[in-house]
Length: 383
Image (cartoon, rainbow, N blue to C red):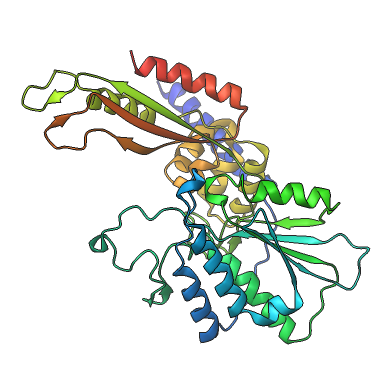
């Protein structure tokens, strides 16, 4: 018994030594011990006011463009033009397909490839229109609690106005860029960009324009502690973009009055499907860009976090489980499953004969393979 215990202790000690050595020798990114504080730029009341007023325009985009209020789009662009007169005096602007906006800032050296900054000025529908559901209205543009409140303040009028404010400030100082700069402001990014970005791509190709770099919507610049386990400033740079697909599931059942319900209703069957889809997520895996991210992020983590990353031969399942707990980290590891829309009965005492459920997937694997996995799962769930 003593011999067995001694062997077990020795094996454990060897395992610990291996884990520690692998952690200490793992090729994490080299971070400076003296991390500079992010540069703080004073924001003028004028800039805040311009942005807040821009948020007040309900530039909502819908998949069915017939639902769009394009008059609001036109009013928004007119407001922006009047709010930044110097920008639109010195930069050439073009409207593509009526609402896709492209600004061109000429640089000194035309032999250099231009760069393109992209943003979008459409927003998603706010959902409830009941004022009681909002502390500040979705299009109030209220300046309160140290923030500008409303749709688009994060996604993504903020970046559109930041680009315009930057151009305005640089122009006022007499700055001329080394190379040409283009700024594209898209009208329908939230619904796939078919009327905006797609038409922009065709336009740029026809003009023979190819860019040195394209900067588009991406991650955040996080302070220490913003992301669990990360103890230094870190900028999340998007290296690619997932595809997205939505499945509409129609579940049929027996309609009628709720006073005489069947043992299994359409809504109940739909609930089972939704529950199983959420409990049986698509598999996790680490692809190369995520592995590279962990090498950088891990450099700012404590020893336990570093050990999990450095010893995936033993601790990979634990690492993935830990990442799964955080929605942002979870999205780095798998095709995500989200139940986004649900429609049943319009009356509290009426049984819906049919229930509609929409499942949204952001996928990073081949569409054919993903569809096969989901179809197999749905077939199982509807039995």
